[in-house]
Image (cartoon, rainbow, N blue to C red; front, side, top):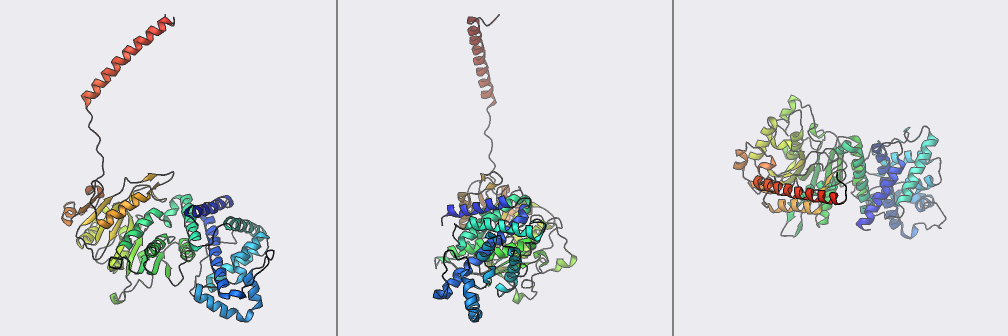
Length: 535
């Protein structure tokens, strides 16, 4: 399927969502729409694998036979089901009973079956607790099938669900069930729902073009020139992972360059978004053994695998990406001043936890790893505690690059933001500043970075180029001379001076124009006299 067809699928699904949600707000309907897409993916993938596993034993039904082939096989081979499911767990890492597969759900919707709602409720519980070896408890917790928003009673809710599912089934029937296709459509819908949600979208969505920049940066340094390809990134972390798009982008970037990636880790505080990210991983073909998403608060470091006081057992990551909430207010306790993440730097102020997020991630970065984090510009120049943290990071030679991006790139805010790239073992003693604030395309709602803008940023970063009014490599002495202020225009100023105006020339031109106007007035007056239109 081409990129155009992928976009067509996304648009078709969005049109269905926009048409069906009715009085339900976009955030609520998002959970239904994306969950049904997720079930469709799991089901199609499972049925295709089952057909391959059973081979000639897979039932072939007549066209007018609406039964599910796998359901027919289950009834005829009850003694073999346990062995079959063991094989399926080994090959696709999960099982789904035939009655809970999308094909059956879609058929119940088509026939307006009264048992659709009950079947869905049981199916969601089954997938959460029994489908996978690892528990996906609460995966569908945000989809309230008993909600009054679907209808006031069971019959009305069941009827509404029949309509929604039937429309979705019809809308995607003509498109491929390929993982990449549905995955791209899923990402498209997440972006569309984010746009419709306005500021709330900042909780879970990083625009794809910015995600691409961060992914490129953290994977570039894993390249092994002698092999001509990417080395393996063993562990990748996003401690404010939202829908998981950043992690998926890093994974895709490595695989596209013939490299290998180990396990990806994410943490997310918002329960709705946490469930969204887990679905997103599975829908993009990431096996449940290849990722670990935790529901919790990164600032409190409440994830057991990270909260390890013994340095010898500390979890370290080869790449860390993050888009944490900007200038988040937090309430650090006195004891947190002794926290192993903050002890050497001090605590970020209560008014803005930006550096607290940064230090959390940086603590778990491996010696050869790269961290890229999106933050508001204030972290570059604010004083007090933030200046002390910034100064120590600079003196310890951990800040590698500062990239300034245009304003209005995010759904959640119109302010310009920056990307900070950090390393524990830098190759260079200077700091690269890239001022990309004026490179963008205007769109209806947000500004956008096109391919050329992104390539310019990546090329400048990779080759540490100095370009007039765009990029500059500043020494620590130069930065110290600015009192460790990292405000980008101090180092790469893209301000365009207005051309000098020659006042004398302008006055002369005005006099010439006035003389011409006087002559023209006289000429017009003569015409009017000839026509007898003057007194």
